Image 1 (spheres, rainbow over the protein chains, first blue to last red):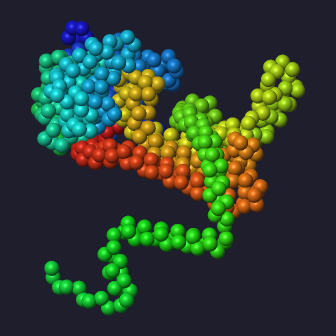
Image 2: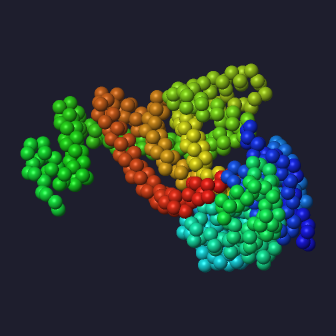
Image 3: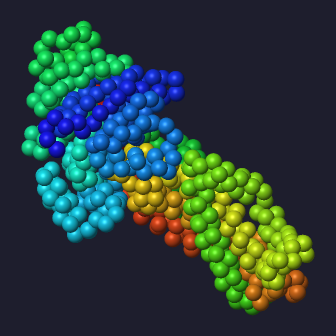
Length: 253
Length: 307
């Protein structure tokens, strides 16, 4: 894939929870190697967008396309479920609460995704898993259960687990929000390396403005379910078009 | 030390202070001893035939194996049914949800003893009438629905306890946070993979202790099978005590022996159960402390996790 190819394309996305319209028409494109940081107040719909991209939430209206697979919402028939599963295999997701599987060791967590696919070789998966743990700096913790790891370490294992699927795009849903302040750095460093060394396309919902300024190619500001404003960090941190964006940035900076 | 307490005044206060000096376990043991002394007195006054009890203990205790067969068969059936039932109760499939809902409602909503008689008495009649009406049914059909009392009892116990345990299993599965399921979904796991590899292994820790309790309860409910009428050679404890007590005109002595055996049996399993619970809760308690420390429910920025 060369730079400029479309990895994720969201078109006309609306999402209702009951009567509440959380997303009110989102159009968004993520290109290969691009890092997009999504900002916005609590309830502005930024997490819901990420969850719609891999169908943890079903879009009420509109479509999501990942690596050429284009899907909409609607009833989950057997065929639809399989299509969604295929799409998810191209998407890595990292959660605010890590969501590691507590009964598995760090290595088993990393291996379990690939092992669920048909025809994967256990020895190869194991070697790759160890390499991924090494990459996030946790090779020595391979045999530890999540309960023995700090929050920062757990989140790095979670990143390795998502990478083990060899995704085309990584989604980060407030990856450092549940961490003690002194532990956010190690997670952000891994994410930064992923962006700059591996050119992994990333959609990141975060309040870490330092990370946005340093790593983001584009910042997108969500307000009440629409994209109010977007642009490169230099522009967003400089002169914003909307006073709402300004107010938000002033509040978090 | 500031000022010393004033000396005890009343007798009650002196007694309370003296009692406080004795270890709690010792006092409890003393209470038990007193209760047993009273029971002994009761036995003495009631003029129970102790020799009869000693002589017939072995014969009644031989019913233990049948009691255990029924209880173990019943709990095995109940576990299978509860597993299937729980998956139905959390299913979005209307047929699975409806069938499991009916199952739980009926078997929790009617008395166990009624269910036993229904299975024991009604099934043969259904089998006979069906065999009369449809000649095409295989020859053995009529007899196949005439069940041995122990088997009918085991079936009823399994079905009944399975209904209660369906709710235990369902609650256990639902106690696993939705984040676990979502993480598994995000990894592209199928429903079966999510259940097998992620949800059920965690839910088992929650499910096993109450299942042990159900087994202990079932040990006692096996006594109901005696109402279906079993030949004494293959009768469980209560049936044996009833038949023997009636024959020798020692009904109370026989009952006391039966009660003693049930009591010893459940006490034994309660010890296992307590150990099992301790073993399982060890990891669980540690999990809870870590969770509250490192995974605050409210994120520091007040940012919504899902919206």
